[in-house]
Amino acid sequence: MSINKIVITSGIYQDRELRLLVSFDENDKPTDLINLDITKVGEIHLATVEKVLTDIDACIIKMDSGDKGFIENKKLKPEHFVQRHSEKKLVCQADQFYVQISQDRKGVKPYSCNFLENFSDSDINYSFVDYYVEHYVDMGCEIVSDLEEYLDSNLNIRRYEDSQISLWNLYGLTGILDKVSSKVVHLKSGANLVIEPTEAMTIIDINSSKNYGKSTPMETNLEALEEIARQLRLRSVSGIIIVDLLKVSKEEEQKLLVISNNYAQKDISIVTIHGFTNLGLLEITRSRSFASFQI
Image (cartoon, rainbow, N blue to C red; front, side, top):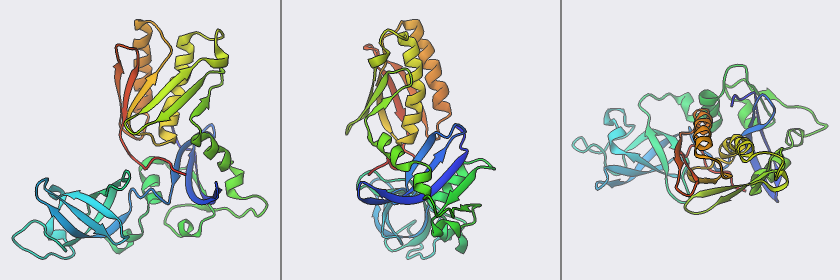
């Protein structure tokens, strides 16, 4: 999925003010939906060591934002510390250094961080938006925003100035949020997906619904797989994913695996297609890149 446009704006949804980054593909379909109030991947912070975890060779840090982080000691280079309290130990409590958040936290767990060896004063303002554009967006992508904090960045962001309609309403973000918040996704053929997140995994069921008898199970599965690939990224689904496709032959299952792997290669996260179980369930795992969208 190539990103054609990025919208950065804020608005009210379900009585809450949200700051969002929404990217769109060449067909104007939403690709990524990021809550900028909870997603912090890419941010750079000065960190202070709170606790050294000798049993797992890592440490808990407190960043200047007040957030807790986790970093493996093997990533540290004491010669690049801002402040060091022992020449004999690799790291000890109260040592200070710069880190970059590499993975959003899940629940109350600390953020995973990487050590920053080379650092300049300008890097301290590096945000998730900078990170996203640098890593996932090609040259020529249009970026538009009405938020002052991002207009002052080094990114080529166009200021939105139409007073007749808000940027939020222009791109129908309330409707996009409604769809992402729903567990049912309707397909063009009349079939639908039911996406059920649980504590242990995400379960996706394909129902032929109004499409019954109009398309073959294979045709419905092909349509479903394309939409599943889009929904996993749009909703930032990670971990174990079980897909209950419509029953097809073993030969057709192999074709579905090939197609699933093709979609997996286009994802910004690491997606692994593990194959079908004896019960005909498709097993997938997807790495965690950004925090799952939350209202």
